Image (cartoon, rainbow, N blue to C red; front, side):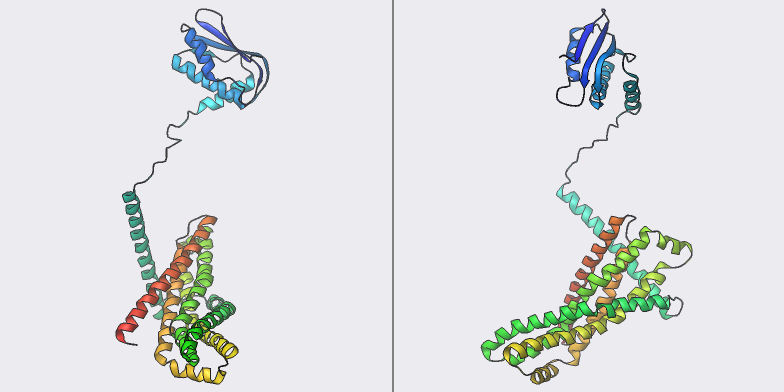
Length: 374
């Protein structure tokens, strides 16, 4: 059954009769069919509609009518909409009230390689500038604290010390013990070729005390405490609590960042010492359990091999890592956007920034120690 019929009622007038079901689907005629009729009758200057035979309709009818009216406007043909149903006329008025924005569908253009390099370089320079400014503000707040011109809540500081230190002991124990165990297991297999299994104590002791204890503790704390700092401050940024502190004349740097930086810096050396002990115990378990080395001999050899220089380097690294982790976590939290997804992005960025900073600091400290001969 034909649902679209075009009738020429006079030399300059035509009527379009719509009937049947006008539901969205492939069976609906397109405006191009009507354009073909208009091409055959170029004298047509007025077009009307007859919808008495129309039984059902949806947006498919509206799309067709809108296309027809656009075509008639281009041909300078007047359209009489009085023959349409009242609901159709109202919806057409709404559809035609706001013209389609010309640049609503912008074509995506691929960015050139040099443009991408330039954009990334500018973003890196801006990020580096923000980082330097944040570190400077943190140092200024720390200086005011040392001069007793700034303070923070003692109760909150105690909670931060507990969260950064005591609550991190289980995961630090597990990871450090396993790292010492792995170092001993790999090292003793090679030393066994020369009958020098006892020197596995030297390997594990020096590695844990000088490097691995501080590094593994730093990475664990970066993923645990640094991410928590970023999430806490990011949530406060989303809830506009930081803006409220600024409005009240309270420095967010002294009130929020400083206690976190001080607490983590104080706890990192203690966690590093604990990690060293757990790593040495892990190495002793392998040496005593699998290769029959007596625990007393193992610990005596460890005491002879590990010097105060090694311990000092490890503790110095842990202090540096504590400062870097706290700064990275607080900086990403303070830079957080105003949405829930921004909090997740800030947390992820804090962990990545902390780990990269830990690796870079380790390389620099190792090179400096080698240069000065310690």
